[in-house]
Structures are given as C-alpha cells and as structure tokens.
Image (cartoon, rainbow, N blue to C red; front, side):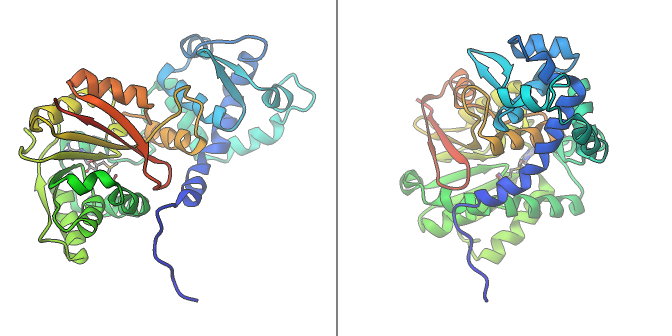
Length: 340
Ligand SMILES: C[S@@+](CC[C@H](N)C(=O)[O-])C[C@H]1O[C@@H](n2cnc3c(N)ncnc32)[C@H](O)[C@@H]1O
C-alpha cells in the first residue's frame, strides 16, 4: 500500500471535521427551547432571538446548522420546526429524545461554548483562535507555525482546484491577500509559468510562508510582503487580488473596508477574487458550510456569507460584473468582480 496524491475534492474530510457541531447544535437548541418556540408558530430570526433571549447574529448561524440537519426550515424569511423536530425534539412529544440529548450536552465542551456565544454574542474565551492577533497584525512565531500548518492542510485540495480555473490564464500578477502558507500562490505558480504572486500577510506568517514557498521550489514566482491589511496601504500594480477565506473572518463593516482597500489598490480593469464557501441564499445550508459558519462564530468576527451578501460588499465598494462559480475544490466558490 502506498500513499496517494491529494485530489480537488476533499468534501468527505470537511463533512467529518465539521460534524463536531452536529450534536452541540441540537443539544443547545434543546436547552434553549428552540423547537418548542418554532412549533405551531413561525418567526423571523430577530423575534426568535428576543423570545429565546439570545444574540440574533449567533442565532441565525445556529439556525443554519439546525436547518442543514433537517430540524428547522425557513419559508419567506420565517423559521419553523420541521415534522422531524416536532416528533423527536419537542419536550411535549411522546417521542422526545430529551434525556439522551441532555446527557450529550453535559459531556460536550462545544455545547457550553455555543451556549455562551448565543447568550453573549461574543466568541467564548475558552475557544482558542487567532482573531485578536489578526486584528493587531502581529503574532508570536510558535502560534504562526501552528495556524499556518492548520490552514495549509484545509486549503490543499481547494488550492489545486483554484489553480485549474481558466481565468488565471490571462492574469499576470496576483496579490494573495492573507495568503497564509502561500498554498494558493504556490499552486497558481505551478499551473501558470508566467504568473507572479505576492502573499500579503502579517510578518510572522510571512516568515512561515517563505518556508513553504522555498520547499515548493517556486521562489522565482512567489514572494511574501508584510502588510497589515487593515491599517496599511495595499501594494499596487497587480492584475488581481485573491482573498481566500478572508471575508468569512470579519463583520459586514470590515468586509466593506477590505473591499474598499482592494478597489483603491487595483488598476482599472483589475479583478477581486473572493474564494469562499457560500451559504445558500435562504441561510439553510449546505450543512457543512453552515457548520463552518459555526466555527467562524466561535473563533472569528465573521460567518459564511451568501453570494448576495458578498455582492453587496463588492458593489458598495465600486466593483461591477460580480459573478460566481464553484471551483470543484470541495465546497468552494470563486466570486469575481471588476474595477471599472
Ligand atoms: C482564515 S486564514 C486564510 C488563509 C489562506 N488564505 C487560506 O485560505 O488558506 C486568514 C489569513 O488572514 C491573515 N490575516 C489576518 N489578519 C491580517 C492582517 N491584519 N493583515 C494581513 N493578513 C492578515 C491571517 O494571518 C491568515 O493567514
């Protein structure tokens, strides 16, 4: 038996990884009384948040996971419990699974973290993440190495699929904003001999990315540049800005700021390319994307956005011709727009 090379489609691993949120989503709904509140009446997210005394943004993300699991559905903006939930998850139903569900909740740290996030609207202190360091634009080297390796693993299949996209054949230079380990720039360089890429990152991650670039043997095409994407001017002269898994870390206001900074730095005719897992327009799935959004809720200021939401940020910044296509790399899409 020998090992096999990575493919473009790693959805089986994403489904496995993000399934850690399946039971906590249900145990927390049980503790909050979500199914009872949505049985016999329909509610929008804000009204349900008020009834359950939880944060509306966090609840919307939580409901997305419950919808992906088939426990709630959303019609014309209003949520209701499904027949499955009213049969097995309603405390007054004969078939109520409460005693089993409650034991799972008591044993699961993610249950407590999700409950805390729903009640406070803030990421729990007990959930380790780098968002504070990202906001400051600096990070210790040990943490940078760990996080870069983590992101490199989850982006490997996606990077191969991005490099296949025909649009890169006509792109000479790419600014890979928040490019992490440089995995996307490395695969773009391998697939397109004439393409040059710069990974724009915080200093400690640039140092990490330099080692990945050297190991891949693409230093003639890919380099790094330390720039704080929030507080410093972005380098100019690139045909395209590529942002993978960046908007999903940040609030609506910060996404708009990033779109504006990109618009400022691009030449007329330049493109912004957002590589993200898109939520369905009704916020009800796909399940794995909804669970990824839950991870963003726990560890960042953001969430997985819909195409309409991303279009809104891009058009508000002045971009035109917004379009989107799946890449074939796991659940990802590439959303592109042009500076007129
Ligand atoms: C979720 S990771 C995405 C990494 C990579 N693009 C991918 O998809 O695998 C977000 C990246 O944004 C970078 N980042 C966060 N804050 C930043 C800042 N203030 N300036 C520059 N880069 C930043 C992080 O270091 C991190 O590598």
